Image 1 (tube, rainbow, N blue to C red):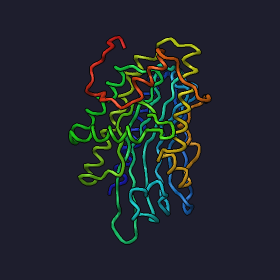
Image 2: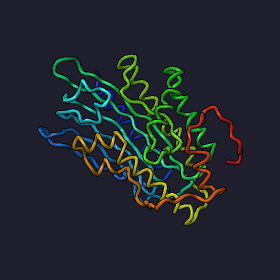
Image 3: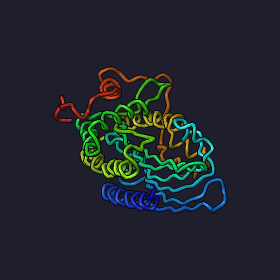
Length: 311
């Protein structure tokens, strides 16, 4: 287990992503480094990179963290109960971007490494992560591009990974209490150690490296589209679903809060403006209704041909 190799990759990935996002936005991200004192419940360090009220992003962050703890929290052992109570080491890069323009989708990406350190055996190491897209107004071309980029990133590691991780993403980013997906998915994986450390780490790197190629072209296509109060109002309503998922189901959020992590960094994923309405439904035939009927359902986006080429 070479944790320094993983750490160096993750810090480099964070900087490459921030540089790309700053070029898109036109404004710099702020930098907030932090460190936990040794001897506490959780120790380690991190680097929070955040933008608020930028030219493109209303709020967004791309965080690196590297922590060690005395006991793995429940959210990290639900699939590995034999490791309950073990010390752990975890590091990762996590980002969420909430654009001003409702035609530019929200996006989430995370890549991470966990190591459980039981006293009676060798360290147990696994990787997790993925990326997913949450549009407010659906464009087939964007969904196809995002999924095809994810598929291309995973193909060198085995043709079976994309359909497997795509299905996992559809199942994971699903609001059970609403009976609807959060967005149009992408790829998601967890507890991944197939082929040993080098192979699993290499696959995780491919996912991280694919983020900017997957998202930047969508931003460039949509950021100039005109919008009004109607679109912003619907965006705020749909952002409520994002909040609900992150606070109720998201394993990364739960892990951070349960392990005593840094609250400001953990909750940087929350959108700045959100609305809830009682039993609201979009009017039939509207673009808002089309999001539900055409996009908030599983589709084989990577293999589809656009039916509306102008989209």
